[in-house]
Length: 157
Image (cartoon, rainbow, N blue to C red; front, top):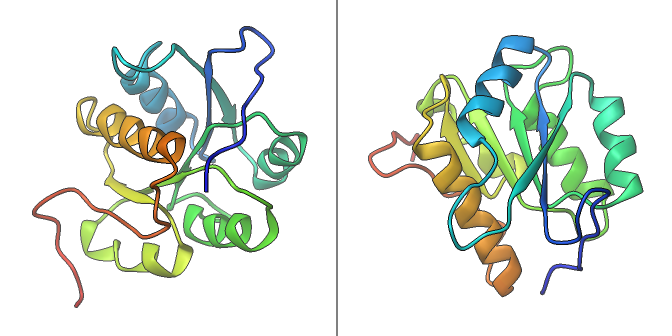
Protein backbone atom coordinates (compact mmCIF):
# COMPACT_ATOMS: atom_id res chain seq x y z
CA UNK A 1 0.00 0.00 0.00
CA UNK A 2 1.41 3.37 -1.01
CA UNK A 3 1.76 6.09 1.59
CA UNK A 4 -0.49 9.11 1.34
CA UNK A 5 1.13 12.41 0.37
CA UNK A 6 2.22 14.47 3.32
CA UNK A 7 2.02 18.25 3.43
CA UNK A 8 4.32 19.96 5.87
CA UNK A 9 3.95 23.48 7.25
CA UNK A 10 7.36 24.58 5.99
CA UNK A 11 7.63 22.92 2.60
CA UNK A 12 5.68 20.26 0.77
CA UNK A 13 8.80 18.19 0.09
CA UNK A 14 10.15 18.05 3.67
CA UNK A 15 10.00 14.81 5.62
CA UNK A 16 8.42 15.22 9.04
CA UNK A 17 9.95 12.93 11.65
CA UNK A 18 8.22 12.63 15.02
CA UNK A 19 10.68 11.88 17.81
CA UNK A 20 9.15 10.57 21.04
CA UNK A 21 11.08 10.28 24.31
CA UNK A 22 10.35 11.43 27.82
CA UNK A 23 14.11 12.01 28.18
CA UNK A 24 15.26 15.40 26.91
CA UNK A 25 18.81 14.09 26.42
CA UNK A 26 17.62 11.24 24.19
CA UNK A 27 15.59 13.71 22.09
CA UNK A 28 18.69 15.88 21.79
CA UNK A 29 20.82 12.89 20.70
CA UNK A 30 18.21 11.97 18.11
CA UNK A 31 18.12 15.52 16.80
CA UNK A 32 21.90 15.60 16.43
CA UNK A 33 22.07 12.14 14.81
CA UNK A 34 19.29 12.78 12.30
CA UNK A 35 20.35 16.26 11.31
CA UNK A 36 18.71 18.15 8.44
CA UNK A 37 18.86 15.38 5.82
CA UNK A 38 18.81 11.60 6.15
CA UNK A 39 20.23 10.80 2.71
CA UNK A 40 21.00 12.52 -0.57
CA UNK A 41 18.04 10.86 -2.33
CA UNK A 42 15.50 12.03 0.26
CA UNK A 43 14.13 15.51 1.00
CA UNK A 44 15.32 17.56 3.94
CA UNK A 45 13.79 16.70 7.30
CA UNK A 46 11.93 18.57 9.97
CA UNK A 47 11.99 17.02 13.44
CA UNK A 48 9.06 17.37 15.77
CA UNK A 49 9.91 16.37 19.34
CA UNK A 50 7.36 14.91 21.75
CA UNK A 51 7.88 14.27 25.45
CA UNK A 52 4.40 12.82 26.06
CA UNK A 53 2.42 10.16 24.26
CA UNK A 54 -0.74 12.30 24.32
CA UNK A 55 0.95 15.08 22.38
CA UNK A 56 2.26 12.59 19.82
CA UNK A 57 -1.16 10.96 19.37
CA UNK A 58 -2.71 14.41 18.84
CA UNK A 59 -0.08 15.18 16.18
CA UNK A 60 -0.75 11.83 14.48
CA UNK A 61 -4.46 12.62 14.41
CA UNK A 62 -3.66 15.94 12.71
CA UNK A 63 -1.64 14.10 10.02
CA UNK A 64 1.50 15.01 8.15
CA UNK A 65 4.03 12.76 9.92
CA UNK A 66 6.28 10.64 7.68
CA UNK A 67 7.98 8.50 10.33
CA UNK A 68 7.81 7.86 14.07
CA UNK A 69 10.95 7.31 16.12
CA UNK A 70 9.93 5.98 19.53
CA UNK A 71 12.04 5.48 22.66
CA UNK A 72 11.13 2.11 24.20
CA UNK A 73 12.55 3.30 27.52
CA UNK A 74 10.16 6.26 27.92
CA UNK A 75 7.94 6.43 30.95
CA UNK A 76 5.10 6.17 31.80
CA UNK A 77 4.27 4.85 28.29
CA UNK A 78 7.22 3.31 26.48
CA UNK A 79 7.73 3.25 22.75
CA UNK A 80 6.85 -0.45 22.52
CA UNK A 81 3.34 0.08 23.89
CA UNK A 82 2.93 3.31 21.96
CA UNK A 83 3.93 1.62 18.68
CA UNK A 84 1.36 -1.10 19.31
CA UNK A 85 -1.31 1.52 20.10
CA UNK A 86 -0.50 3.50 16.94
CA UNK A 87 -0.76 0.36 14.78
CA UNK A 88 -4.09 -0.58 16.36
CA UNK A 89 -5.71 2.86 16.44
CA UNK A 90 -4.35 4.83 13.47
CA UNK A 91 -5.56 4.49 9.91
CA UNK A 92 -2.54 4.23 7.59
CA UNK A 93 0.09 4.88 10.28
CA UNK A 94 3.56 6.10 9.29
CA UNK A 95 6.58 3.79 9.55
CA UNK A 96 7.82 3.23 13.09
CA UNK A 97 11.43 2.94 14.24
CA UNK A 98 11.79 1.70 17.80
CA UNK A 99 14.79 2.55 20.00
CA UNK A 100 15.70 -0.14 22.54
CA UNK A 101 18.34 -0.14 25.28
CA UNK A 102 19.30 -3.77 24.66
CA UNK A 103 19.08 -5.52 21.30
CA UNK A 104 18.10 -8.72 23.11
CA UNK A 105 14.81 -6.88 23.72
CA UNK A 106 14.26 -6.40 19.98
CA UNK A 107 11.96 -9.42 19.96
CA UNK A 108 9.42 -7.27 21.83
CA UNK A 109 9.24 -5.05 18.79
CA UNK A 110 7.57 -7.93 16.96
CA UNK A 111 4.58 -7.46 19.25
CA UNK A 112 4.74 -3.69 18.87
CA UNK A 113 4.64 -4.03 15.06
CA UNK A 114 7.50 -1.56 14.64
CA UNK A 115 9.13 -1.51 11.20
CA UNK A 116 12.71 -1.34 12.47
CA UNK A 117 14.66 -1.46 15.71
CA UNK A 118 17.79 0.50 16.59
CA UNK A 119 19.79 0.25 19.79
CA UNK A 120 20.40 3.07 22.22
CA UNK A 121 22.64 4.98 22.71
CA UNK A 122 22.03 6.56 19.35
CA UNK A 123 24.53 5.70 16.61
CA UNK A 124 24.68 8.71 14.22
CA UNK A 125 25.38 6.40 11.26
CA UNK A 126 22.89 3.60 11.93
CA UNK A 127 19.87 5.67 12.91
CA UNK A 128 19.63 7.92 9.81
CA UNK A 129 20.33 4.92 7.57
CA UNK A 130 17.57 2.89 9.23
CA UNK A 131 15.03 5.74 9.16
CA UNK A 132 15.85 6.44 5.51
CA UNK A 133 15.36 2.76 4.70
CA UNK A 134 11.88 2.55 6.20
CA UNK A 135 10.85 5.82 4.54
CA UNK A 136 12.08 4.60 1.15
CA UNK A 137 10.20 1.33 1.58
CA UNK A 138 7.02 3.16 2.66
CA UNK A 139 7.22 5.48 -0.35
CA UNK A 140 7.72 2.50 -2.67
CA UNK A 141 4.82 0.65 -1.09
CA UNK A 142 7.10 -2.23 -0.10
CA UNK A 143 7.18 -1.70 3.65
CA UNK A 144 6.13 -4.92 5.30
CA UNK A 145 5.16 -4.16 8.88
CA UNK A 146 7.68 -6.59 10.28
CA UNK A 147 10.61 -5.73 12.46
CA UNK A 148 14.01 -5.47 10.89
CA UNK A 149 17.01 -5.21 13.15
CA UNK A 150 20.58 -4.16 12.71
CA UNK A 151 22.66 -7.07 11.30
CA UNK A 152 24.26 -9.16 14.01
CA UNK A 153 21.63 -8.23 16.58
CA UNK A 154 20.63 -10.82 19.13
CA UNK A 155 17.28 -12.55 19.08
CA UNK A 156 15.27 -14.67 21.49
CA UNK A 157 14.27 -17.08 18.72
